[in-house]
Length: 155
Picture 1 (cartoon, rainbow, N blue to C red):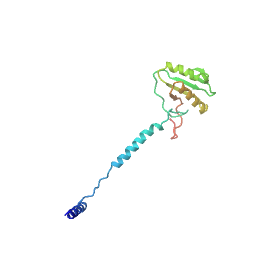
Picture 2 (cartoon, rainbow, N blue to C red):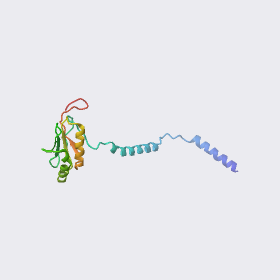
Picture 3 (cartoon, rainbow, N blue to C red):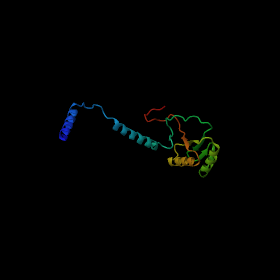
Picture 4 (tube, one colour):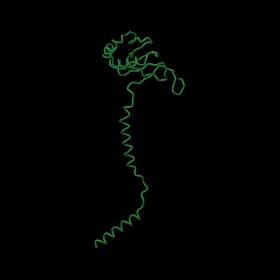
């Protein structure tokens, strides 16, 4: 009797398989799982790919920065390497001390850096480091407009 019950059960399974319709739907659950993992990876990795300081070199087609609440602080590096805060000449050794004193009085930490195109890149980066050490982390590089673009046109 047990033998016949097992046979009937297995015969029923065979019939069920023969009569069952095949599923024509795609199982999207593994696809969604993979996409969610990729999304999380890109969300974590994207902030690491951004550059800390936006860089605009002389003669670019970049647009102007928006107007500020107060008169912008401007640091200028002349062709002969002289540093100026607004219109006053500053010794490079006194730059950080002067910037810290100015940062206490200002509302924003925004500063504009103007550098002659002939100034070595290393010196410009040293001044940017001094600006950061002096309390100014929002540095905008001032350029002349109308420079070449990557698509070889001028504005």
